[in-house]
Amino acid sequence: MTEPATPTAFPGGDALFRLDPGVTHLNHGSYGAVPVPVQEAQEALRAEAHADPDAFFNGVGERLDGARGRIAARLGADPEGIAFISNATEGANLALDAVPLAEGDEILVTDHGYGTVTAAAARRAPVTTVALDPHLPDEDAVREAVLAALTPRTKVALLDHVSSPTARLVAGPRLLADLAARGITTVVDGAHTPGTLAGPIAAGADFWFGNLHKWGYAPSGSALLAVAPAHRARVRALVPSWEDHRGFPRSVEYRATADYTGWLAAPEGLDLLERLGAARVRAHNSALAAYGADLLARLPGFTALPHTPGLPMRSVLLPPGTAETQEAARALREALAAKLRIRVLVWPRPGGGGLRVCGQVYNHPGEYERLAAALPAFLAR
Ligand SMILES: Cc1ncc(COP(=O)(O)O)c(C=O)c1O
Image (cartoon, rainbow, N blue to C red):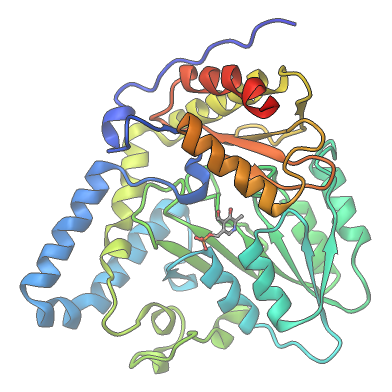
């Protein structure tokens, strides 16, 4: 077996963040991390809000229009078709509330879906869960598995754009077109796509939501909901505000005395990504994740998995019997953080769970080497 080529560091990548140097951060995909210039932009906005709250809150609606316009321009979206929201989970709930569901209608989800998002579906209708074998070779096989699980009662398909545990493209354009042709409403979870895909908003989806705070370098609590024109009039804020009568997107964004500074600073994140060179960042991050996954897949008992090329996250299967349940996966993740000071995602699966590594501009090849060197003895404990 040839050794995987060692990727180079991203010049200046470390200095953009204030991460704890005593921790190896290989889990950007879970919460993101906010670059220093974006933290500073948000701090300046907070100072402004605290200096004259009346002026800040009276003008915040127009400023949100401006920030949303900047985001729309960066993502190639219709500014009237997107709204700021707090996170992907909120997006799932808003979208599913906007779909009229009758007695007997079902929502299709996959077992790669994110727990809080799947819970939003289960709260509203019976769910059919498609089991996606992580070994499915490509997106076409994923597409076929999803289509094969449809029932005559499937009204909505709630699908990952890029899945969290396995980092795979699920809701590709062909699958979305196939579902639309069958009259099924599609709701796409793009939590990981802003910053990682050149076109992050799934064209052809009825609803798409995604986080700006993971790979888009935006402050925590910054996300978007995109809604196709036919559905916009039915989207209603989870909590009505004084702006409820204005309809989407303002009715969804406005929430009285909230902290809007994250959304207002969010365009700074996407601007920073553009200044660094989005394609360059993506190439760097995916090369690092691939390097990490290659090292791990060589360890005894570990298994490489098919993957979607170009993404900054990669997963491998852990040795059989490891992390078979949610509790065991959490315990392993916490033990790795406590004992080795390494942060990764460990995901559960009957028979043996998986481990996901991420690549970001602050990461270095040595961090993945340290993880791969430590894991065998650690798991043997
Ligand atoms: C695919 C996916 N969907 C949704 C979420 C939830 O995101 P949030 O906590 O921002 O709601 C995550 C979080 O990691 C995710 O990976």
